[in-house]
Length: 188
Length: 188
Image (tube, rainbow over all chains, first blue to last red; front, side, top):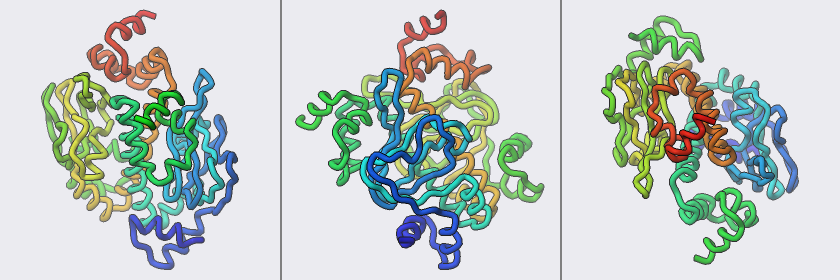
């Protein structure tokens, strides 16, 4: 079980057995069922989640009642409402499971403490934050400048082998198009 | 001159005189004139910039030839094409000066080296990256869910006292609306 987390961290930084054991103490392992919520809108957000298995999404309901999806997450992806987490604001985003999922979570206090104690942990979280920023920059530039067809092609490329596990309605939300437009993109 | 950088870093983490002197060695001070480019599209991006004074923007020209603005930056803001910087890809964004500007820059190698040598520097850059992520998350949620009027109000709130130094055409680009729509927002 713990091998997953070690492998995930060691993609960025090598750990001794002692360092790894110490870091592991700061994480909680959790299982969630399909449709269960990890974060609900307007709640306090005290955790970041790293996905071990399953499939989750993160989004919000807009004023017209439509779900707007910011991100999907599967194995090796981090997910939360980061603004709520880092700035101690009520959640604007909800995070819930599309499939049964297993995650590790870390609280705000735990994250700061593990970074204070173990320099390699701070390095890991800095690099992950930078990469997360890059993914989000790609997302905002796509929204600003790309056509629905280009965004669809990006989506297939980015989420590749598990894109077919995501219901079409959710893919349409993520791309910001109607279900009918998505069907046309599929067949074009 | 160097007081600015110390104050900027000490918003996050306290430094001894020795630590500060050591960190300062990793930065270059630069002056740019209005309309000068710090980063041009398709170039290699080896630097992040922290603005000491002036006003800059970061954006791209879309397929229809229209400028799309991702971000403005003034005193105490960081600016670059982060994806190009962190992932060693050619720039998709250009960064240029709206006014004469003074910045400090740090290269990719220097950033990694200062973080390796000085734990407080790694902590500083981790926290800044987290906050940058939050700002970008707000930006993408606004693009996905807010009306032009709401985005305009956010803009006035976020860029407050220096929003009137930004030409209207650039504000319209940032908000993703036409110049005419922006005029209506101003007067409504």
